[in-house]
Length: 324
Image (cartoon, rainbow, N blue to C red; front, side, top):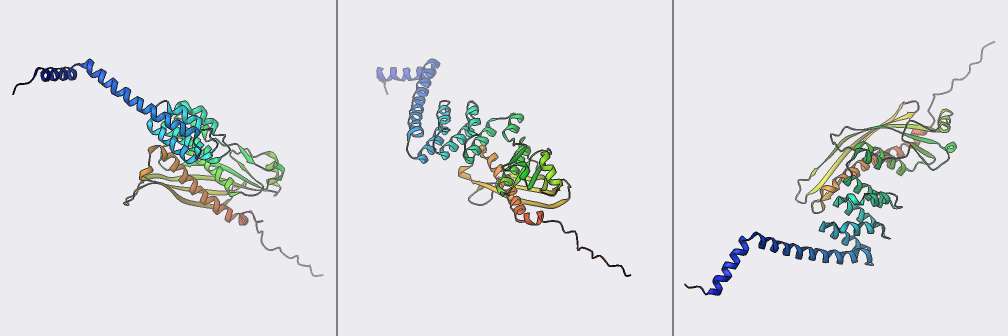
C-alpha cells in the first residue's frame, strides 16, 4: 500500500520527535509546566478556604488538602493558620506541618507551644518531635519546671517528688524518658490534689522540707519503669494500628523512703488503617503511656485518704498504779 507524502512526512516527524532528546525535553517541560500550573491553581483555591472560609471544619479540611500537595509554597500558608481564631484549626495546622516535616516552621511551632489551649500545645509538640532529631532539643521540648504548685510554699500539705523514670521497653525512641516524666507530671496535675506541690528534682524547697519534718505536710516519692511500648496491626478484618504501653510505679513516703504502694497498668491507643500514617506513631505512643499513667494516678487518688491518714502507733498503754 502506497503512503501519501503527507503521511510519510508526519511519520518521519513523529519518529524524529521521539528520538530527538531536545524535543523530548521540551515536551517534558511543557507537561511539567502544565502540572505545576494545575497545582498552583489548587493551592490558590485552598489558600482562600484556609484563610477566609467561615466554617472552621472547611478550614481544617483545606489545611490537610494543602499538605497532601507537598509543594514548598503550602508551608507558609499553613503557618498562617497557626494563628486562626479556632483552636481546632490551629491544632490541624500544627499537625499538618509535622506531617510535612517542615523544618522552616520550627520557630512558628515553638510559639504555638505557648497557645492557651492544651490540644494546640500538644499538636505543636508532636509536630516538633517529628521535625527535630537533636536529642538536646527533644529533651528541652519535654522539659517540665523543677517546682509546680499554685499555693504558697508555707501552705503546701502534699508533696509529690518525681524521681527516676526509666525506659526498659526496648523501644529506642531517644526522648522516651523525657516524655515519661512530662506525662507523669501532667497526670499528677490531673489528679487535682488540693494544696499539693510537684517537684521534678530532689531539691524540695526548704520551707516545704520543714513542713514535712513537722508533720504539717505529707511527701511521696515516685520511681517508675516503662515496661512495654509496642505497636502493630490487628489481625481483624477491619485492621487498626494499636500501640500498647505498660507502666510500673513505686510510690514511697518522702523523705523516709518507706514503700507506700506499687502500681502497674497497661493502656492502648489505636488508629484505623485508613487514617494511619507513620508520622502519628509518636502520638499514639504518648497517648498509650499517658493512659497507663492516668490509670495509676486515679489509683493514687482513690487511695489518697488512706495514704495520708495518721499512722496508727497502736493502743496506748495504761499506766498501772503502783500498789502502796
